[in-house]
Length: 385
Image (cartoon, rainbow, N blue to C red; front, side, top):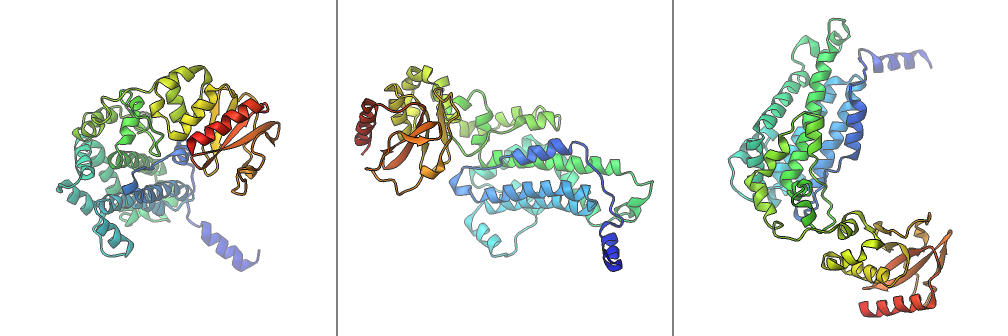
């Protein structure tokens, strides 16, 4: 390293007070596993906003630990701005278009004030009601964001890099503030997804969850986050009492609950063969292709797993005791109806392919199918045409 490079390298680390934040591991792993995703087709674009906000929150941890403290606070404030912008553009296609074209849009604080005074669709009404019933949470979050502004805008000597290198600077006090903002920011993401897609609340509601016979993109509302990380046990009970949620969930109130067998098929992609009679009783909840899978298992064919040509979803069964492998190489569109489709060798097991409703259904099995079993599958194909 020459002298000039040494100077530049010194500049890179000069006056940067590095640290390791308390709870960093727990929070980073939580952020990594966080699934802030709505399955609402009309609001699918919001997933990009939610993902960006989580990325900004994640970035803030590393920025702070590397000594770029004001950038870390700014990253958290930017997640606040992204959440606000999402609220704004979700309220109309013209607003999303303006945002894409980089036209003027109001600030995050103005957006929130505007929404509090607006009467439009259920999303806005839901936001207003949840904001009101959780006003302490929203108020605390916004006060924390305002505190971050003092650091971002360099108000006070303690926001200067050189000052922070002095012994009298209390980094622990600032770390506490930073972590508080970070934790509330994560919680805000969870709350906004609940407003955007209340099915997430229903999926966490023990009285309703088994009445929703669908495999959904949206994840259940994580009320445990507020209880364990923020020590707030009243968040979820308050949301359950809102008119917004009660109106939404009324569509499921009189529905039949999924029994254990059908629940495992729909939610866990698992067929417990011992519960086939139970599954049969609620077969109307299955997809059209799953109905054929049910017939296959009822016939006595010991399928270890089912998967589709154009999907990464794999449904296993209680027959899947051996270590079969999903061979993606057989998933190609060159396989014709007259090719060898049964008992194709797949490692130590076998794959058979049938055509159900013009879809390739792959069946993994440990033992070769008999001629009788193959004929049954061919008849099943014909009934699906």
